[in-house]
Image (cartoon, rainbow, N blue to C red; front, top):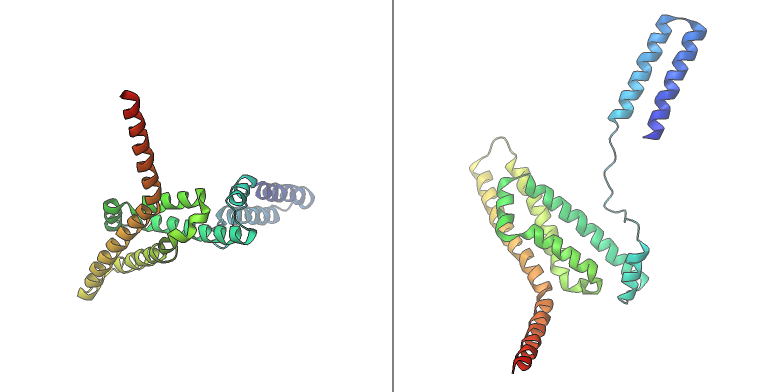
Length: 213
């Protein structure tokens, strides 16, 4: 932003100098038009999209968390690469869902997007559990993104044949099944935590019972 402002200021200063020295209204007009075109070009320049291959910077706190978990430097790097890719896939999945009412309805039935985000957060907290989420990370989520991409592409056809409608229906059924699998992935991932909670509750109940006797 600052660079753009200085470019515009420089163009205005240059116009003023030439106008005072030359005094040619036509030359000044050309320079003004040129400055306007430069300004429009700067304003219309698109900000490049984030590269999914570029990892965000690693904070000291996060690095300490990974090291405390017993991970090596190479394991941390592989984990971060996997999670970075997963984050972009979840963002893409969310974008696809919000762009189509039928996909949105499927997600409401299974809560697959919320399960995906929750599983992502759980993995960040417990990175050593990455292997337990292998089906979600390497099969179910990538397949869901591909399926919803293709669904949106086919559904956007202006003219739909009987075959197109059949393909849309088939895709809908498969997406429904995949959403169910993603929800199941999350349930299985946190199953141990739920079992631990049951144990804790059982111990607490026994303690309360003894205290009341």
